[in-house]
Image (cartoon, rainbow over all chains, first blue to last red; front, side):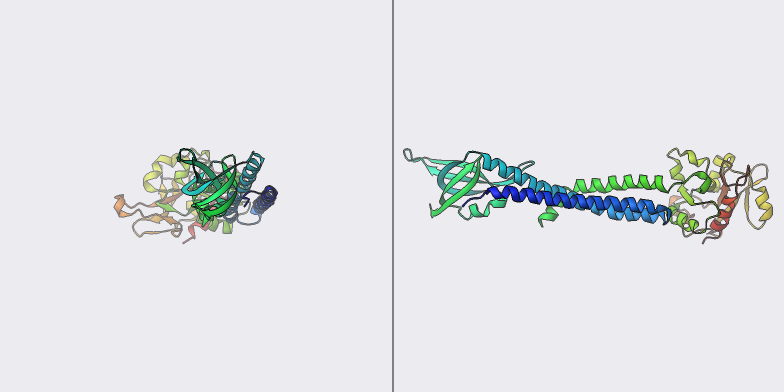
Length: 168
Length: 193
């Protein structure tokens, strides 16, 4: 099961573009309405016009900030992260999957969950554990296989494909 | 739920935006709505509490000819080194404060002759220069919807009368061929409840 697909880069880029256009339109609408209200101060009460501007500008700005920081930047980071992963050389590994409780927010990037892959050294019988990361937005496919024997493909320390599911 | 969590995570960004945008737009509106002293009557009021915006809006309902705006400021505003304080048209202050500013006020001799029914404040030379607008004994005064004259007893200050004065350097006091809009405005002001 592949966790990263090339088409996703295009989807994230499109969403980033659409939201950027929407927030730009919203900012332009805010600016035009504020300029219009400023021009009306000659005809109406300046104090009331000022309060109207605050009532438009403050919540309007909050909406723009939210869209910018939590929607556009999120799609931008997902796009960059997916590009980085798909451009890296993949490696495969096998073992028993153990999902960790640890969640990490990587600054200016995605939030990841740590998982470990445990393998038994055939000659010594020693249990070797290797840590990998899974993007939390794609973790469902991985966490259902917790405790099972899996074969993973990883790139840059991230699991990009997983298969198996037999009891370890 | 995620939306609310994300908003709370960046609460400082949203608060900063609210503060900066209101300060900036406040400055823009002050610049846009202000006008030259020739078209504006400025009044400084030193009272216990003052609804300056509401009083300005009420006085602007009946503007004298040539006047576009009434600016009512608390005396605290003058503490920021406003040069406009000296050029203000009207001052409303308590009896104990009068001596500090008396040289800035104009004489009301002519006005007093026309309006003998009013109670005046007289300077050392016996010249009337202020109109009493609040009587601490009867607790009656003008524009009491907007101005609180009575100081709470808990503050331990004696009740005082309040007087209305006209600035010597004002732009609408009738001196040096100026208009008498300040006196017209004062009549409106003294009629407010």
